[in-house]
Image (cartoon, rainbow, N blue to C red; front, side):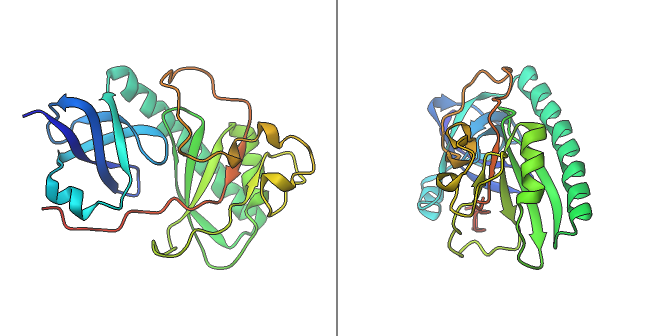
Amino acid sequence: MNHREYLLSYGNAGDFARFQYPEPLSCPRGARLVVRSHRGQEIGIVMRPATEAHSHLLADRFVGQILRPATEGDLELAERMRQRSQELYSEARRFVAELLLPMEVLDVEIMLDGRQAILHYLRWAECDPRPLMDPLSREYRLLISLHDLALPAAEPEPEELATCGEGGCSSGGCGSCQSGKCDTCLSHKKMKTPVSDELNREPAVAVGYSTSIVEAPAKVSLL
């Protein structure tokens, strides 16, 4: 049967949500779709059609967009981003070890647009992530968001910390940048910023990072 709304899983952390398409679409379980989640453009995997009961259970949750069924080109691009994510993961862990930061990088994901990344980590003490994130953002030309896997989902989102990678930024975010280059900094833009469907164009030159938390959805029972 054709449906306009499906439950999809996405991301390495096992998140899931409702995703909608403008018109009825036939998607078997396990089908791969290109979607726009709260994190950006990525591949989602069909779990099942969404029902009215799911709408009530997940009424306060983000509802994503289904853009299209994934093509071979989309899957090849996703694989290239996976390989690039592995390189970023290894580099991030090397920096953490060299800087003696009280944290461990567990995973890294780069979105399909090649401009945004999620760094999943655990930390056992407070620390300044900028010595880690500034060089990574510059080298990989990415907007990197930090996802603390130990943070309870109900805890309020902390104040955003952002940098354009040029130095001079303080905890006040882009408004306190001393270099005058924050007009090109992507890190002050929210993840909801629309992403172009031209997936193969070169990544933007501007770089930055954000410590805004990408929260994992609460676990609910699927009827």
